Amino acid sequence: MSHTIPSQYVDLLSQRSFASLATLMPDGSPQVTPVWFDYDGAYLLVNSARGRQKDRNMRRNAKVSLAIMDPANPYRYLEVRGSVMEITEQGAKEHINKMAKKYLDVDQYPYSQPGEVRVIYKIKPEHSRGMG
Image 1 (tube, one colour):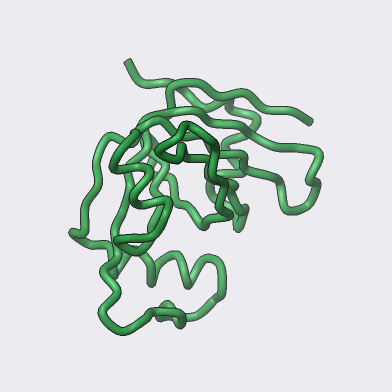
Image 2 (cartoon, helix red, strand yellow):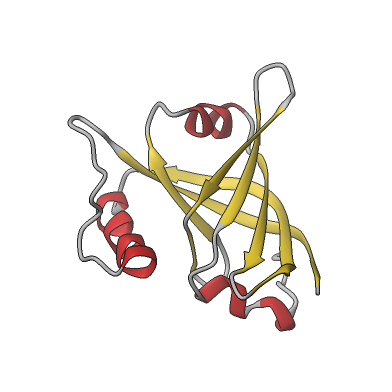
């Protein structure tokens, strides 16, 4: 069964909100990274490069959490806990360009590194709650 995001916080998923993505290190300690994200109506989509710490963590342990703050009011936020349901390179380069348009208002992601392989993580929300 799919978890529904509370309607009063859905706006945070379409605007230029940043998320803090929490993953688990091999020893069980948390690792947090600010990320851009997308929402397709069912899944939160995070894009990263293969081999980064969050990539290694999500491949090993699918459980993640995201805290998404309202850019206009940081006391209003949405926490989403869920699982990475799919990891794919398919369409990831196009997706990071879409995210660059949303977050930077540029047509192409400007921070690509030589040899970098982009990856999309599809996160299924399993629990969410908002504040503010």
